[in-house]
Each structure stands twice: as C-alpha cells, then as structure tokens.
Length: 410
Image (cartoon, rainbow, N blue to C red; front, side, top):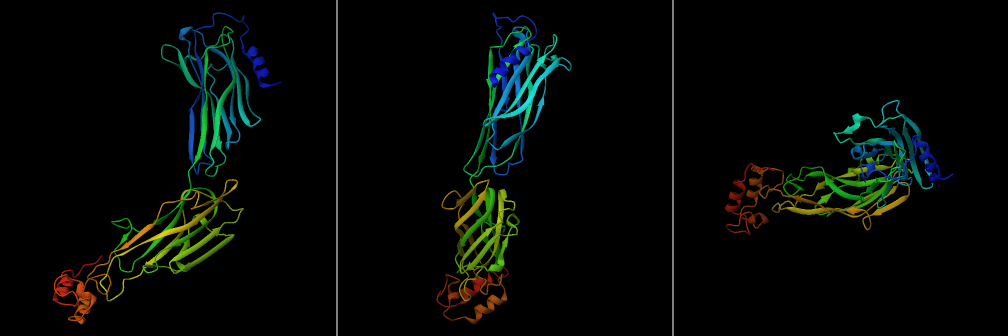
C-alpha cells in the first residue's frame, strides 16, 4: 500500500462522524509553514550542531467560526545531506484529553527520510483558546518541533542541501469538510563550505607598518596557519626568505598542537633562505577541523647590517612559494596553492636601526662616539652621517650628528 492510499484512508478516519458537506466550502485560508524557512550554516566546524525546525499551523477562523479538527501530513528531507532527526516533539493545539494521536512516526523512503503525524480532536473540541492571538481567533503556533543533528561536513567545494517538504497532507474541519483553501510553505537546509587557505602570522607586536621591528638583531616568530579546513591530516609548505637579512635553523621549528604527534611521515629541510616541511598524521587518527589553526611556527633572527657601515633599514619579506593540504571528509581531497588552497600573500619584515648606533648594540652612547673618534679625519662610510661638511671623511659634523642623538634607543 503506497503513501497516498494510506493518507486517503486516514482522511476518513480523521473526519468526525458527521455527514460530509460537499458544497459551500468556507472562505477560509489555512497554512502549514516550515519555520525557519531557510536554515543556513557555513563550515567548517559545524559537525555535531543541533538545530530545530517547526511546522506551524496558521489559520483565521474568524471568517467562519470553524477551526481545524484534524490534520495528517508528512515532512520529507533528503538523507544524503549529512543530517539526521534526533528528536520530535508535538505541541498539539487541543486541550489535554480532547485529542487522539493517531500516527507519530519516522521512516525512510528511497533517498528521503520522513516524519509522519496524524492527530484528530474528539467530541466537540476546538483549538485551545489560550493559543489564539487577539480577538480575531488567529492561531499561529508550532504544532511539531523537529530537531536535527549535523552528522558530517563536506569538503570544499562540496555543499550540502536538503528540502524540508510537507506532502500528503489532509486537514479537516469539525463539520467533516476537507479543507481545500490551503497553502504549504516549505523550508530548506544548506551547509556551505568555506574555501581553505594558508597564511603567515607573526606573534610580534609590530609597528607602524604591521611588521616593523626596532630591536638590534631581533628574533621573532612567524606562524603558518591553516583556515577553513575540514578533515585535514597532512600538509606541506615551501617557505622562502632573503638569506642576506634573515636566518634560522632546524631547531627553531615547532609543530603546533593542531598537528601534534604521532606522525606517519615527517620531513624537514632548512637551508639558506628556505624551509621545506611535510607532515602526515596516521590515517586512523582524528583529523583537524578548524576555522583557524596554527600548524607550525619558526623563529627568525635578523642579520645585522655590516659593521663599519651606517646602519640602514632592512626591507624584506617571508613568503610561501608552495603549499598543500590533504583532507578526508570522508573522501580524500588534495588542496594546493595552485588550485583550491588560498594564499593571502607575503609577510613583510622591516628593521629600522638607529643610524647613530654605529656599533649596533641598541643604544647611542659613548662607545659610538669613541668608535667615531678612531676614524676622525679618515675616509670612511661614517663620513656620510651628516650631509654637512666633507661626506667622504669623518669630521666634526659627524660627531655633532651622533652627539645630538646620545642616549637614544629603540
């Protein structure tokens, strides 16, 4: 027996035992509404989220003085959208003892899951007046709350979609009339996955150009972050910088908790101006879901400008030349910076030492004046400290330049 046969049979069961009127259908609108009409989430990290939808019964019986006496309907949704029904609660609009719950069930049919409910009033019962809004007798309240659980998250660029569709419905009045003046307002569920990206982040409080340091030979950390990742279990990064200005070594690399051990595979190669790192978690271990997660950090050391020269600004950048992420949710997906893995650009580094700090120890003091005195009258790069006088040799104007800045530090 198919659903339509069952519903037609229930229609007669639900009608009160009075003659059925076949003419003069009342001028009366009734609606079954899904609310909210659109449930939307943006991944990642929404798995295990619960959300409710309500089926509302709306009518205005002031036009006829008649109310809904019985209802029977199905709510269908696609069972391929990564959601499942975990709870359903009826809010039957008739007073206790004045209704009969005929059907209250869930099931599966083809590629759809469904919820099915059928309720009829008994005797001369009408909808509970306490649920009516205002003097007109307007009734607009939930009759069923369905609570859904998000079971899985798709990988970018896959999205999940389901329609909450009210079908095979029957409504009747207390006079035995099937209601034909009706409207159905269905709903939708969507989970949109954000595009994964990789970016560089510095933990230093740089100023004023975002990444500006004023320490002598400073060290600073740079973190590599993955964002909008679902089911990540492996990554690789090729990081590059100018070795004339920055240096590091293999002992300055730290993997973040998001990719804590154990590892199925890890390789690390640090050279003159580059870092190659690749990490894979064992396949059976939990994967990484994250809106933003540090995967590893690296400590850099700024190389000093050459002693004996006038300290000059260092203007360089750290950049990702190539990166990839491997994820499973549940299928294996491979993202890289040539395809779906976004990369937001380089991380600039500016070092602005004090020009008068000739020995570059972090302060302009007597030692700088002493160093300058050793070169007094000689042809030297420090002769260009002051643009006044002979810029080819160290003279009194260069001493004045340093002396005016005595005591300065970053």
